[in-house]
Length: 115
Image 1 (spheres, rainbow, N blue to C red):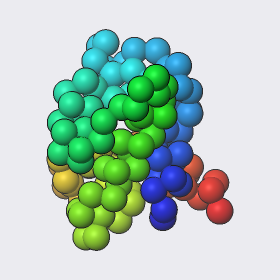
Image 2 (image 1 turned 180 degrees about the vertical axis):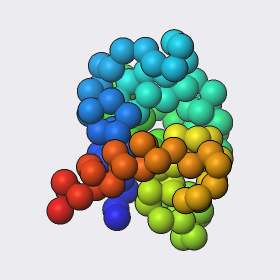
Image 3 (image 1 turned 90 degrees about the horizontal axis):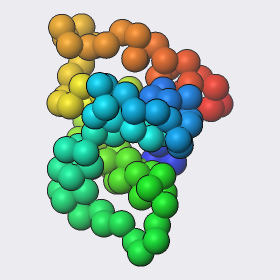
Image 4 (image 1 turned 90 degrees about the vertical axis):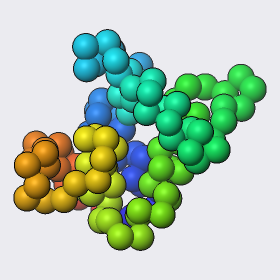
């Protein structure tokens, strides 16, 4: 899966692709990817992705999500595991207690639509 496709699928899973999605997670998440401020801060610093002058939030987040997908753990993880890492906040695998089956089902559904 390429980074553009991953970003598109992840946005569909998180908000049905709505760049203006309402606040979620008790006011901690917003936008197409329902990102938390601490996630943006951590990964933007780690990946050295900075916003461009007058860049739209959605465009900045797309670049950050794509860079997140390209982070070296993608060499060892399947795309669904990278998505779950985004969702849960740490690496997890099928069968582990914190694996979210509903989230995985949505990811698989949207991934199948891309072909």
